[in-house]
Image (cartoon, rainbow, N blue to C red; front, side, top):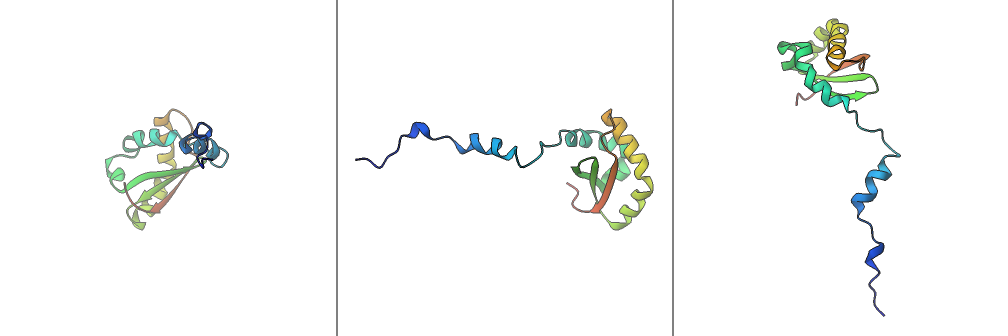
Length: 105
């Protein structure tokens, strides 16, 4: 008797994992790519050098900045940045921004 099993019953793991993960995570935010596209124009070249969007959490945009001094400066401009980014996106996708010191990729 052979120890080999019938291989026609096997399913490639790449076909299983995406369906299983749908139950445990949200769909990726398609808007994040769009935010990257409009970011530089919305905030201007000077800010874009030292601040980059890094993630979404609901309607909160997380933005990495180069220093704590930039966090302080951008807090004063946050409402205007939200308005300009949403205008670039064509809809109100961002309601708040959290700035944190982090890598600028």
